[in-house]
Image (tube, rainbow, N blue to C red; front, side, top):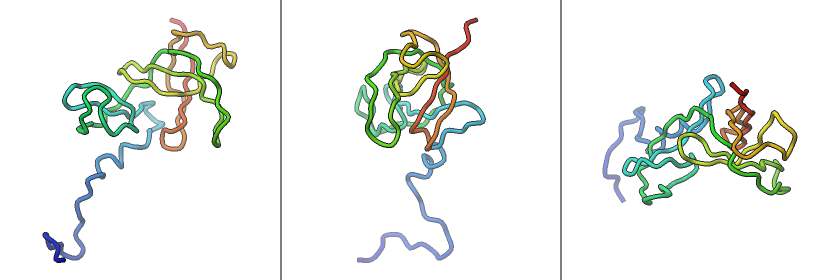
Length: 136
């Protein structure tokens, strides 16, 4: 089988995942979080979603979140895997939710509706830690 396009030696080939490769890691310096926004209905989805949760489109564009949100609920603690915990569901201001741990209060006693901000992300954004926002 012959290739459809001849590529000269030493030139780079097209990589369809290249735009997302640089956006998968969460930069620690500016305190932002990467998520995806649907090109058609403008719904927000977590960075791990492949399809829009509202319209089902695969046309998701990477966007940067500010990393602030509200504690939505307390989940049951998990004991599976290498990283036990992450018992909170945090609704971010951009419109999507993530599971994360929250520091700055007693374990399991963070009130529902408390404002939080991104404190740390490990393993390219898979382990998120939020901290309580100071009251203003």
